[in-house]
Amino acid sequence: MSDKRRAELEAKRQKLAELRKARADRMKADTERRTTTEIAGPTPVRRDLDDLVNSLVGSPSRGSRESGGDRSPSIPGTPSMGNMIGLAGPSALSMSGSGRASRQSDFSTSIGPTPNQPSSSTDHVIERDLVDVEQELFVLPRKERVSYNKEVQTTAIETDDRPDDYEENLRQRILRDHDIEKERLTQLSEEERAGILTAPEFLDFVEQSSKILQRALNDGYDYIRDYTVGAESGEDDSEGRIKRVCEFYDERYGKNRSITDVDWSPKYPELSIASYNKNPAALNEPDGIVAVWNLHMLERPEFIFHSQSDVLSVTFSPFHSNLIFGGTYSGQILLWDTRSKHLPVLKTPLSAAGHTHPVYAMQMVGTQNAHNLITSSTDGTVCSWLVDMLAQPQETLELVHAGHNKTGEVAITTLDFPDNETTTFWVGTEEGSVYQANRHDRAGAKAGLNQHDVYKGHAGPVMSLHFHPLIGPVDFSDLFLTSSVDWTVKLWRAKSLAKPSTTPHVIPPLYSFDEADDYVYDVKWHPAHPAVFGTADGSGRFDLWNLNTDTEVPVASTNLGSGRAINKLQWDRKDGRRVALGGSDGHLYIYDIGDMALPRESEWTDLQKTLAGTVGGGQATGVAESAPGR
Image 1 (cartoon, rainbow, N blue to C red):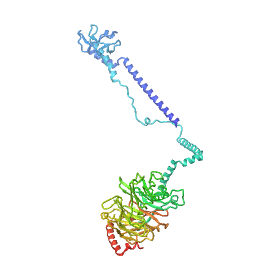
Image 2 (image 1 turned 60 degrees about the vertical axis):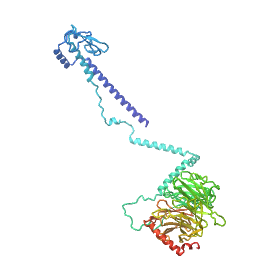
Image 3 (image 1 turned 90 degrees about the vertical axis):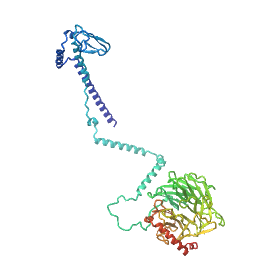
Image 4 (image 1 turned 135 degrees about the vertical axis):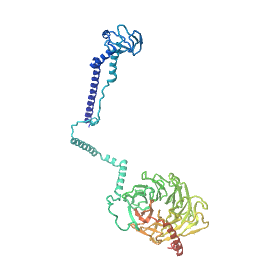
């Protein structure tokens, strides 16, 4: 290629040299033509004109024409009399020996008629001067005419190689370079190959690239769908059915482990998270695992995080989509960042300032600019943490009940705040009771456990507690559900905070759902439908309830394939169509409830009527009171 380029440059130089030579020749010819015109005498036409002028004004004397000395001519229009007229300056004229008029620029002289020089000689001087001026003003150099055509724009270059030869040479050069690169690679030693394969940059590249490929391969979109064909007639499959969307499991991380908690990402609806306890058979693996799963990548988790203790509770930060909080069996609170590696970026110390017992419940409360992480452990300690400072809790609260015999502490198993509430919360305990507590002193109540109001109804430890979400035209945020190992789910109405009790007062449940045949490990209200909630029990069954349809039996149920217990359930934050179920077999199941997640406008008023009927009927027939004696 360099030889070809050099030949092109040489051809351009030659063409430029030819253009310069042609220009020089034209300039030389113009100069010669101008000189010839000045030296040559007047043309025949000019001679005739001179004769005519001489006949009119008079012909000059022979002596003045043949005079070889310089004479000063008279000014045109001067009378023939001998009056002297002085002219000075650079415009004075003199006659040279050759008969041409020349300008005197360096001296002044007086001009006047002499006896030997008639006044008609002035015409002769003007004649010569006009000839000279005519040449100076009107004889212009001839302009070169340049035309724009393809030859000017692109210069043709002659090459000896034909196109076929050029392609063949290029092909041969590529093959030669490939052989050289292959030979260089084959000469790598085993140590060099191992260094390349274990380099962090190479591993990160393979990790990210393989994730992108797996997401694309798992895309369930039908690329060959024919939209010209009409839809098949028949009933909608999404009505009245619970469909399994996918199942997440990785043998490497989930073997011999159980899922202890699940959650959904507040920003990315396709991401869910699950926490795992330890694998007794793998001593070299971390005790706790947190896996972030992607609905578009089923074979492996999107992120994996490690813990030195079993992770019992986990939650995404609702205000920072990259942050994940976890509560452990040892009492530590861990913070992971999806932008970092497997280990936590922050963690609480193992000291008396924080938790020293298992943390089964945590919740983020507050707003974007002012929020806290609330955690509770089984020793009755409730701590409030700032997200960016986990060295010590911002607040510590000891929940103690004076009515306990052996110890005053309350063993907390679950915790929840009503919507739009950051101070007052409710806790479920191992004894089966539910208590109301305050983080700070408020009107009519002090910080700590409310000693007088006790929500009694369960005969075993309370496994979960969830308040009704604040949605729709009617406020049901004072309703909450609890589940227990006594095989029941109970519906409660929280006592008004404006009227706290001053004496011991037992609050019974509004209604008891006794359909389950095993421990009910979790219960959650639906985030969009006011009358729908889901339960998960120890037999591996997920039940979907709709209070406006039936309060005795669930409207839909499904059994997981393994038959193992379902420890946790969580609705997605987007529209509540999907639910994540964490099983004790280490599998995370995603189900879709279809159109049952879409509420009608009358659902809120229907739920008011349902509650009015079930509360009266339940108290009359003793449904709520019969559960403790089961």
